[in-house]
Image (cartoon, rainbow, N blue to C red; front, side, top):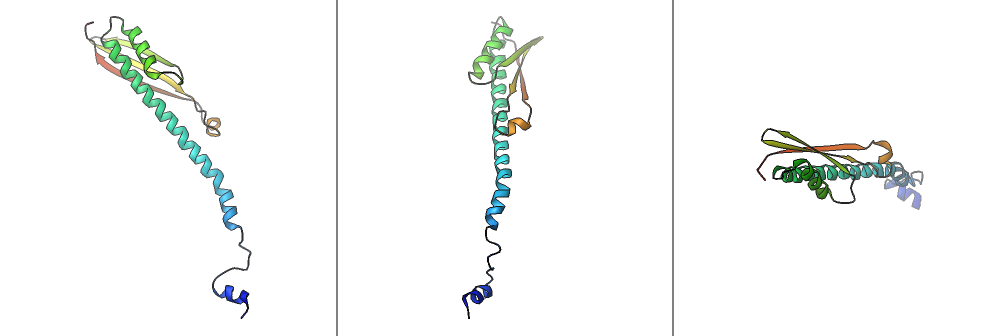
Length: 134
């Protein structure tokens, strides 16, 4: 019995399928990388949304106890965001005994490859609290 017959009897091939796994990896790897970059971009947008929610809470907290709700809300919201992120805009509205602060920020989609496919996303949050006398 020759070595070729022995290998053929055990289900081995004659060498035509060599490199099949490499070709499959080469075809699947770009799709997998694009998917991973999409998950990273999604995480960046979620982080920006959480920052905007916290900025709205901090802004409404400061506005509810201040004599100048608009100025206090804007400075507190800006301080809550910190540096390194996109600038925010904070709007304040008074409705009777309540103050509402709306914070808006543009989440820039700058993750490689994904940033070219998606437009920048605007994230927004608002918070309402009762006015307290200063």
